Image 1 (cartoon, one colour):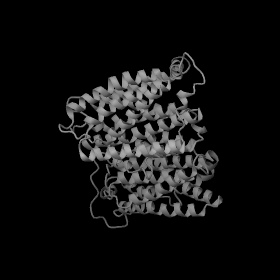
Image 2 (cartoon, chains in turn green, brown; image 1 turned 180 degrees about the vertical axis):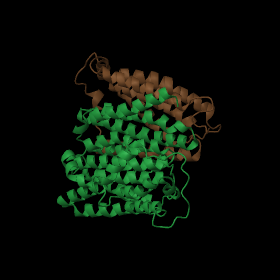
Image 3 (tube, chains in turn purple, green; image 1 turned 45 degrees about the vertical axis):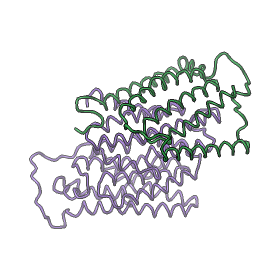
Image 4 (cartoon, helix red, strand yellow; image 1 turned 90 degrees about the vertical axis):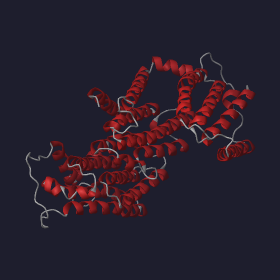
Length: 347
Length: 173
């Protein structure tokens, strides 16, 4: 793509999200979402191979009706109540429809099935943008609707955790697994949303922190399917030693960063006496832990204690770790001791 | 006025049933043209005169006619229409459903006439849509600016996707 065109689309990608974030009016929020969609489609189809074109078409076909539903509900809301404010929605019909269409835009269960398919057609860096930055605008809109309709939020959240874990079980493609992992994390965010929006914001921040290095490592080594994970040890030994820990952090095991959101969410739920909901979410989280565990097992089978089946590859040019990766790997594993600080910053 | 409204709404519902029932884009777009025309009439009766004009000129006149023309050129040569069993069946089904809804609404009394145009509270020279238009050019000019930027962006995105020279949208390189 022409660099000028590319820079125009990236600017629009940034400005679309910023317009949505800074608007109090449904019309402007919708315009921001549309600018976002329009900007990412040529970036998705940048490589011009059939899978990318297919992904762009699917993405457009999903995002367009979702945005249209949002606009329709905003107009219905303005008609019924006479105002366009985002955080003053009071009638049930537009609220439920808007929540569902925002969930549609973010790819949450039961309207999630486009996300793995679209992500499968992208290269990993575009996939990273799609699963983090593109979710920020609808996520923020949902965050503003936190006290509206609790049943919809809880159903969307629990179903996303369950379906995200379930769907990822049998996958062999890393991009699809990351898509299902994204669905699960979105589910955790929505389950706690109406009880504590600050926790939702914190979960989103930590999810972005944790998923960033995973996408970057897989991109650096072009690891598109599971069976390329063991080869990492011969190319980049340090990173291959770290990637099981990164994956377990995404899964939420205790000494790592990923434990913070799960810990605080389940603690909040038990403080409020919602033991059934806490049990369901914790048990459904085990599904996704299973596939993270399998990924980390596969990536660690060729590591040091087991005997080497192959010799290390020749390194004519030094394989240095890029700076962005260095700075993101550390917080994505070691933030747990800073939980009090994160608490006081965000809660 | 009530009679015109009845006709327009009838054409709209019947046409929307036909849009949904048709499997081929050829007749789908044709019926969509009819539906949009009827929708313009409904908008006028509700008081949105400028909106109806814009919809008639831009949506119907500019976009939809070109769409209908291109589908007539490009889509299947033997399109199915209402004379075929399946299409007729679906169309009848949708019509039956909307009839049930209509009877239900009028008998139960959810809808009591069209309040918006039967009980005029006030009469002004400027209708609400024209007022909104004027507002967009005066107080909230930034909205217009962002809208224009959005349309430009859409144009460039379409051009980028359909770039010629073996790099077309649906073509593998």
